[in-house]
Image 1 (tube, helix red, strand yellow):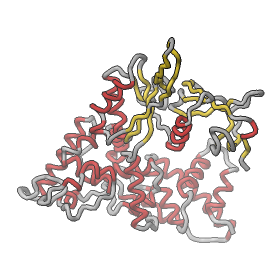
Image 2 (tube, one colour):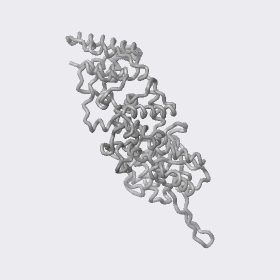
Image 3 (cartoon, helix red, strand yellow):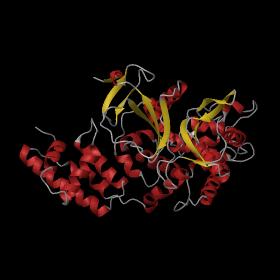
Image 4 (cartoon, helix red, strand yellow):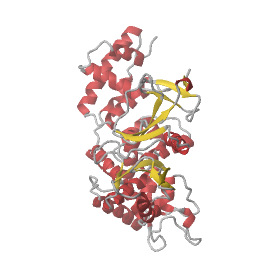
Amino acid sequence: MESFPEFVAIRLGRVSNRTVDYKSISSFLSSIKGIEGQNLNGLLKVWVADMIDRGLALASRKRYVEKLGALYKEYCGLNGLSGNPFVGIKELCAVDVPVNAKSLEVESLKIEKAFDVIMSAAVSKPELAVFLYLLFNASSDIEKAISLTTEEYEPKFSQLDEIIRPSRFHHRRKYVFDLGQSRKRMPQLVREVTNAIEVYLRTKDIVFPGAFTPDVIVALWMAKARRNGVSLLEIRQAVSAMPSGYEYLSSIEGAALTSEEIFSIKRRVAESLAPSGKRWYAIKLRRGVAYDAFADFITANCFNHSDDCLLFYPQKEIIRRVEKKIVTKTAPVIPDIVFIYLNPRHVRKVDALIKTERSGYVFRVTSAADSEYSVIDTPSMTIFQRMIGVFTPDIKLDLTTESPVGIGREVVITGGVMSGYEGTIFDIKEGSDMRHIYVRLSQKYSIKAEVKVEEMYVKAIG
């Protein structure tokens, strides 16, 4: 006998996508996708909780449940079953989410946009450091954070390590966050820290309806986790106490996660808020800006707060005869393009400094002013650097505004300067031994390298 979800999935193909039946069925199937080990009552609770979490209106939720309930009666009639699991979700379906919880999403997005600034300010503002500590740990236990000692602190998030820096703790220091714990009582400390966080966020035009509480911090983490694909069942298990306005999640059973799996989820969310590790970016210098002067400027103004970023400016030697002398001159391989390797949290600062000096700009994914900075993936950059390391007259480079439409065939080069490299054929020009290699800088720009590879060395993979 087919299960009810299977019965519902079959029925989906028989109803018009403009009907409430279709919306109800598709909503149910989408919510329970990938869930295992739950009975029908548990699946229905997850579905209703998901609808509440996505902000579906109370009237719409009730209408969807009624439609699916009618299908269940039909399913029972066909299979001779009795019972009604929909009775168990009646109370959950009637939950009306507070306005505060619904409007939190807007403020959450504002925090993400200002996160680099908040991270920088937290180095000197211990109250903000407490805020980030609670946020990354998905905790509302502000008293525990305030009373956390240097002996108890365990570095778990590289994002926090840059702010707290345990290696710099004085041997007499007792608390991780210097808030004057020895001179004040806990209730006063909690009020002061909470007020300081709220005031700071207000300066960034981040205002929460009602009073700002530690519960808001957990709700912010939950909102970000949902946007990163963390399921409600995983959130239910990862968060020990549901914040105010999210009590409906207490009705569902959390996923069976180990402590390592919960920590992995928290690290994933932390990484999405503040990426750790370095990335390759490309800088377009303004015409006439000398690289040496630019490198000196970056060294003097950016390296101190950019975690010793690395500059890569491929150059080649040009040898020519001037009268009776042999003159050697250094020239850039790709004029006006400098590569920089640094932490993603610092790229905005570097870009701002470059623009202030009118030296150039960092490439973005699109031409929009608020577009994300374009990241060059490390494998592509490694191959590109190796190719530059064996630079010969057979290799020609230029900046191209678009790449050819690809045929999509995977090949490996078995000989010549590019021996061992794999790639995809984008275009085939009869009678030419030139191969094009693209290092993408943004949606609009790529670096096109033309390499002469004889046809006999190009072999299809598989």
